[in-house]
Image (tube, helix red, strand yellow):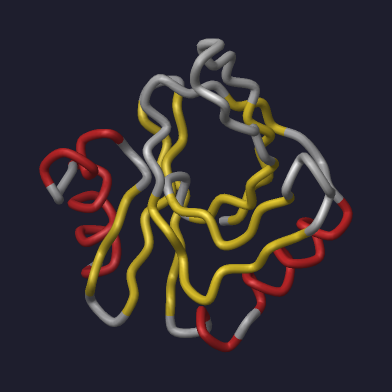
Length: 127
């Protein structure tokens, strides 16, 4: 699942950083961004994981990034990936199965490399 977020982090005065608008996939990787200084769209060759720690983002819309998101979600690269939405309490996570390799968008997976959401999907697939 691809989503567009604009960074709104307030950086300290001595740390000159320009916030951008990002096209996130799998909630922790970007495949494109819009440079806020000149408005140019930069597309990456492969997803790049970035840390959201100590950074603030707001969900937004961007016409060019929206086109890229649709392309990414429909591309042949992802045809062999099955995606599942898994609800857990009041949150929803995305579990991906790419040829038997599982990933989840939850914090537990990011820390341990496994989680209860993946276990639930594996159990569902085996039934």
